[in-house]
Length: 248
Image 1 (cartoon, one colour):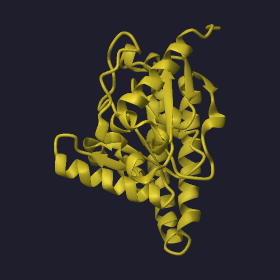
Image 2 (spheres, rainbow, N blue to C red):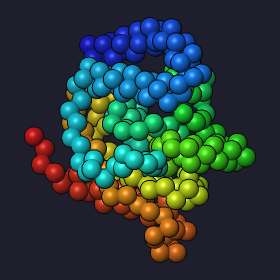
Image 3 (tube, one colour):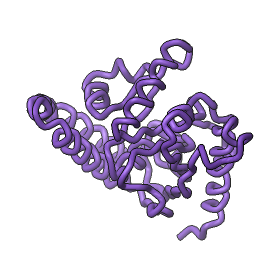
Image 4 (tube, one colour):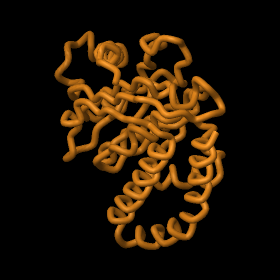
């Protein structure tokens, strides 16, 4: 219970105290956009690291050397927990926007921060609006902003982490149309932090593994046509590897 209280208190205080900071950042951005963007990125990364500390999350990171630091990429991962975003965003080396579900747009203060951090809101029930969102994501990658998406469409709730619904192929259009590298991410143990024992937060051991970059244009024609399926197979391979790691 104490972990839940600390995380909730910190999050509420951060969102409230950061309001005047966002206003100052907005003024700075009118002349120095990149400086304001980096400032926001580092502020939120610091906050997420504090949340991971308060929640008692013990994180092991594998393959971080596969993440390019000199160009925009498309991060693609499996999705089991709200903490997937906290864990992965805290380690992004560059400006990165996340594709979030449309309902997040209605969350006060949090949605404001998300918009300032190039996050996009995807309405999966509206094909036309969903396509517009993906097109904006393509433009952001072209401008040097990395994007992150969880192509399952929702958080997985199966007992086995290897039990994932098929990735939605449209989610990978951002890489297909820009040629940017796809960075597959395999997350294990994240549901142990919160989802497996709602509403409490508990200390858990988590693994985040980055796979080698996938360059869509270098794949065989059949794999290019089913880029989501190809990427999902790579993530499944990493999940199997992580499940075989010794637990301490």
